[in-house]
Amino acid sequence: MKPVVTAADLERVPQNGEFAVTQDTLITTLAREEAERRGITFRIVASAGSAISGAGAPGSAEPEKSARVVAIGADHGGFELKELLKGYLREWGYQVLDLGTDSTAAVDYPDFAEAVAGTVARGDAWLGVVLDSAGIGSSIAANKVPGARAALCYDRATARNSREHNDANVLSLGAKLLSQETAREILAVWLSTPFAGGRHQRRVDKIRSIEERSAKK
Image (cartoon, rainbow, N blue to C red; front, side, top):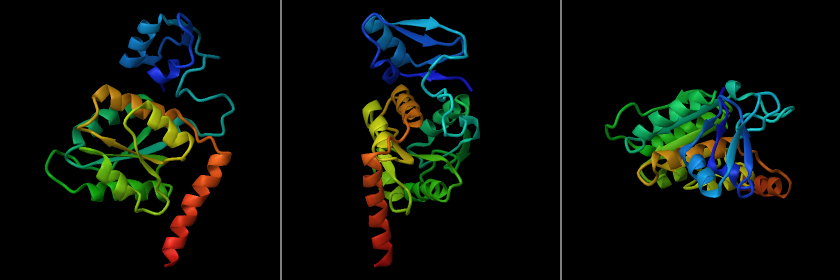
C-alpha cells in the first residue's frame, strides 16, 4: 500500500518548512501546488518511522487498509468518476466492492445509494461512496437506510468534518460539480480522517436515537 499526501496534510506545515515523505509516497497535484506556493520542501526519509497521511499510525486500533472494504456505487451521472476513484482506492490498498452501475446508460440513483448504504450498515463494508451528478439525491437516499450516515462533501474541510465530527460512513460526491483531482483529494482526506469521539460521540448517539424512535412509530 502506497501512502498518499494531500494538500490538507500540509495545512499545519509552516511557510518554507519541510514535510517528510517516503520514496513511494503519492503526492497529489494540489499538494504539490500548495507546497510550491508556500515554499514547502518534501524531504525523502526511510519508510520506517515516517508519518504520512493514510499510512496508518503505529499501534492504531484500526485494521490495516488492505483488510478494509470500501463499497462504491453510482448512477449514470457518476459512472465515469466512480471508475476513476476505484483505481485510486485499489492503489491506496483498499478492497473495492463495486455495486454498479456499469455504464452511462440512464438508471436511478436511489437503487445504488441504497445498495451501498445497506452494505455499510450491515457491516459488509467498512465505508461507502455514492456518486451521482450533484450528490444530493444519493445522500438523501443513503440516509434513509438505518445505520447509514451519508455526508455530501465538496471540499477537504467538509470531508474532514464529516468523519471527525459526524462519524460519516458514506461519502456522497457530485460528479458533475467536482474536478477529478478535487474528488480524489476529498476521498483521500475522508478515508484518512478518524472519528474524534468525545463530545461528538454523544451527538452521533442522538442521531441513532432518532432512527430508533422513528422505527417504533
